[in-house]
Amino acid sequence: MRRSNAVKMAVFYPIYLLLSAVILYPLIWMIYSSFKGNEDIFSSVFALPDRIYLKNYSRVFTDGNMDIYFRNSMLISVVSVVGLLLFSSLAAYAFATFEFRGKTPLFLLFLVGLMVPPQALIISGFKVMSVLHLLDTYWALIFTYFGWTSFGIMVLRNFFQSVPGEIKDAARVDGAGHWQMFSRIMLPLSRPSLSTIAIFYFMWVWNEFIYPLVYMQSIEKYTVPLGVLFFNSQYQIEWGLQMAALTVATMVPLVVYYGFQKQFIRGILAGSLKG
Image 1 (cartoon, rainbow, N blue to C red):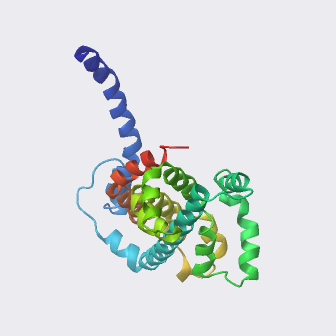
Image 2: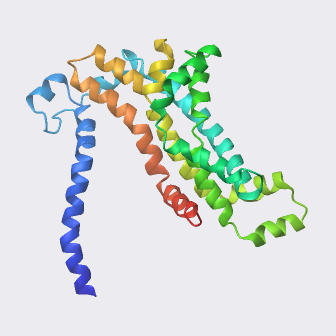
Image 3: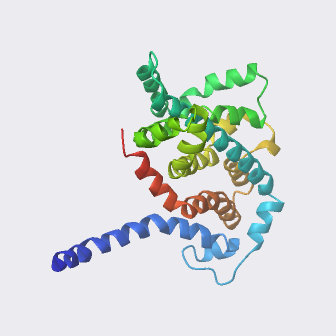
């Protein structure tokens, strides 16, 4: 057994290391290139910087208004994720607990949202927001993102159904109604699943590009992806500056994911206990 494990390690570990290097190197190259001046990038594209050039980052926030885009994205992402968690958990509890006519077809209709790309709804979404006079406002994006509940409903419904019936029966004996059952028992038990959903939703909303591009006309309302596009079109030759802007845009999702990766894995396992 030990010899077999040693052979597997000798064969597969170099492959894993090679794949990791292929995946991580563009990210690492982007980060250390952001600390180079423009002349250093063209003289030595793949070499490490000889000196740390911090002016790129100061210019990203002063000349490129990245602090405004960062604030906009953070506000929209946080409000959207809070709303998505609330709506997803309420709907999932209803599907896992109540029996009503059309329950299965309605649940399947929600799951269709996982198969329809958001870009397919951009025209209808634009018309709705235009009628509501919400274009060029944060609420246009937030209300749109509130509709992305399919993934959360699927994961939380599976988890709520996997909760042992003895816990629910004991709560009912103690006089707990559905709201007490939901808020005091189901939500605390589902924290790993909620963390997983929150991470997914945050990264989706933070990286979303097409809806801000269509809904937002004012530069001061731009999100980080739009800001990076505007920044790159304005500074086409200064590659170090562009690498700094891309690094700022990329770091937040990476920090969120790696900071909560244990809860992410735990939530995926918890949400897959019962289908």
